[in-house]
Amino acid sequence: MRSRLPRRLLPAILCLPLLSTACATPSTKASLARDDRPTLPTLSPELTRPERLAPLTAKPTGHLVTIDQGILTELVTRFAEAIGAIERGNARAGAVKLERRCVAAQLATGTMPADCPPAG
Image (cartoon, rainbow, N blue to C red; front, side, top):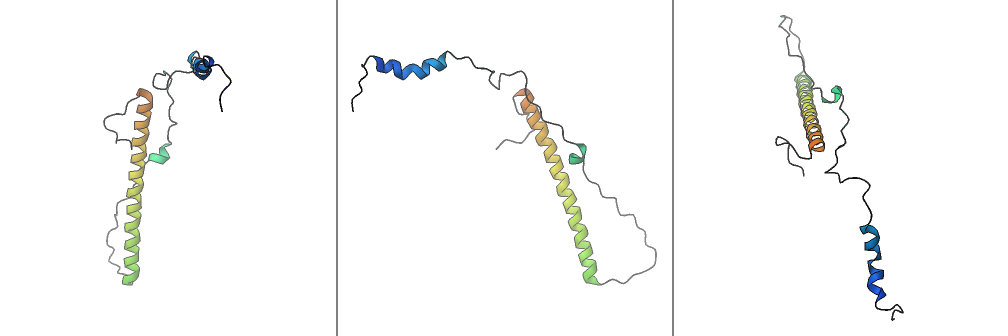
């Protein structure tokens, strides 16, 4: 099907969208050139506070108690699991603090600090 428009008008019609956007001015600066950068909300100390276990300080009393080996094994296993959970929680809290510090520095300066892990 042939167009009824004269061939001289076809390039002008095709360029109309380009012409209308070429004269437009952006309403905001590009994000890398902005002076006002967003900031992250601060985390509560409760979220990043490491957990501590009190050291074992019990002294032998001389009163012996008989306990089944299965129960003792389960108690010791649960105690070890609790210590592992606290260590993993501390590692997560430290990772969140580092991540927040790195993202805040990147938002503030536009560059990632050298001690931050690579993004990916």
